[in-house]
Image (tube, rainbow, N blue to C red; front, side, top):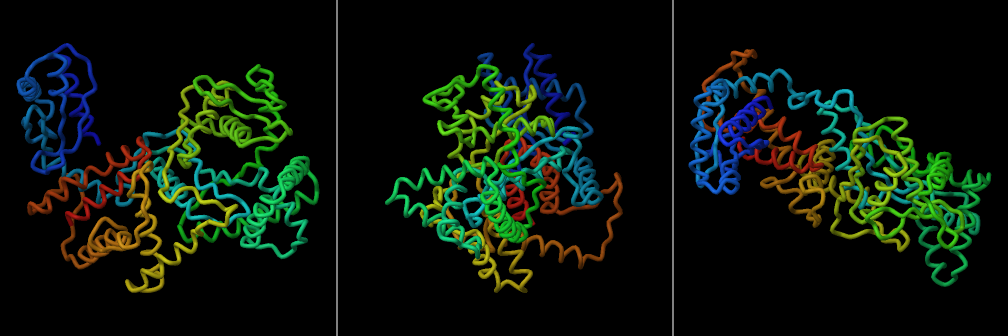
Length: 508
């Protein structure tokens, strides 16, 4: 990581000295190994600005840098390619220093303390209470955990929050059905069945929606029977979710849920009214958000709170409890308008510290939003068990679990966050392409080679061994890992890591 900063700073300083222009020069890794370790198109940019030949600009930059001699310790060669790209080759000494770090630091290689003393909250997974863990929640769960791991590696104190959907009118619907049908033996499947049945009946009887609203109001008012049944729904659901998280090897710090903020919501409503941000509209209370046509619904005309009320209360709590520099919501793209409204309203209300970033990753899911009310949920557990079953031919029970679940997770993560996914079992389990099993196989093969190796490498800063061209090509790729972690975190795209690992595996 140090070498890229040195080269970029040297380039920026050189551009300013030669052309009296201040600019941040950015390096990238060329797609072809023969073009070096780093490349920049700064000469092409300057050529357009100054109406000069980019190749001549690139030559003058190289000449100036070589005269200064600042890069001799880390750069062995600089040249100009094509219309004006400047390419840099790192010295083998620098590469071996990185190899020493890799051997010494092992699993910690790539980590740093850049974010030390700073908090980041990541809101992810968030399945709905009283519903099976649907396949549609996989992306949020897996991407959220990956972002958690990335920012932890960069030294941040990361707070993972499983913002469970445990509040709202849907619980009025369940309470109505449980009492109406006098159901005592509840399970997650039974709760789903009751929810679907409510909507089937509501299509024939429009008064049921009001019945549901009445029961949710009772829940908000603390009705004892409503509270007891609601808590039972939560206990059943949390047991179900724990099983799925264990299968995925996912652990989330907190699971406050929407109900946790019930006691904070009255303050949010009062403050919005007190600051003249909320206004009455047809019996409801709304907040007009600058730049957004649709107002944010704070309180419904029947006095019930909304998702927005609870999300504002959540941000108020997170500011007071964690003072995060960034809050990341790993939530589907269909919630884009909602979060635009909430983020803007939160800033108006002062629920975000100045400078705090509010990020909605907006992941996509090709199969569309699945509807529990119509009984269309694809259960995540069923998909995971199918994946494990398909991996049974590859080894033991434990191996099939690791390979099967790993295939699902990698297939999800290798796609860009905002890229549609087309589920494909064959691509997921191929041992010859961009897949989890292929990477796992490559890892196992590499570990086997190391285990059989009789040569012991002494690890120090003077490490230097003769390498074949193929081995040197691997070394020229390994040192990029810390940069990849930083890019993946800054762009909220764990697929950057997947791409790096796949390209590295192909070189082994």
